[in-house]
Image (cartoon, rainbow, N blue to C red; front, side, top):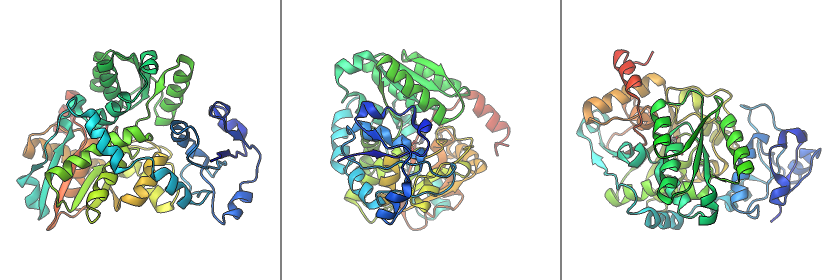
Length: 412
Ligand SMILES: Cc1ncc(COP(=O)(O)O)c(C=O)c1O
């Protein structure tokens, strides 16, 4: 299948290696000529992230027209019609891929438990089960996707090295999985990255590069370095191998609680919820899969509502793992079909959840990882008369943050 890239402003795509991928940019085209043909809309130019997916599939699977859309934050649509993209992109991560990922990564990672928590069940009025990925190797679920990717990497490519852009947990996970294989690794982290996460990536032997404040800035630098140094770029959430790895969380939930009624999952770029939702819906379609985003970083919620990828201009939250300015294209499409709802929580609710997990479950969970519990405690997700599995996605908290939180429990 061909891939079109239409831009009214060619400069905007300078950094996209279109010719390398064998695509022809059609700069200056009027997007409406396409839009009217399909009697639909056009993809936001910012959906350029989708190139990671196109690259992974040699540009064969999806037909995309990119144009300069309105400013980030405004709703745009897509051509070809969303259903076409859905058909093609959706098949990129299947329940079978997730089962294969499970077999591939088994033995290297912890099989985390799913524990019934009476302290959280009582106020919720139902059964609340916690899946503490905070106790997973590297302290978060991210090691699942990173390992699944790295184990599939051609060893010759791997020996040249890998690179990731990350607020911390994905970088740490890639660094750890790369160290198992003896592959060199570089990680681009934000200037203000959590020292715990940076130190952990360094301890696995990674080169840590501090750069910028936004996910886009980190992504651009990582992609440029990947090209310059010939490294394999491992996207944190917009990659089928990463999503399949994260989906193994869903398989484990089903093994431990086959009649689960709802699964609550923190959402950043959407890789975790996309994988979990594919796994859950394949086996138990009646179970609800609900995502939780911070109030100030609800790109997936807005995108699903708009039916197209929407950017949050300056995402803000105490949850540093949930701050991408937009969801990945692949997570967006998969969530559109498999996710039932997305709710948002405030920073105050996140802080309360971190403290409640410490007090009542004796679990150290970072704010990003506590988003599901924040949704249950605040009543934004009802647990009444249901069996709810809540994914505690990470536990990499600095003592400094913890002492500040304990001094001011509402985080203000
Ligand atoms: C602890 C934690 N939870 C959730 C997420 C969000 O994952 P995703 O980007 O796959 O939605 C992240 C991402 O870094 C994270 O570190």
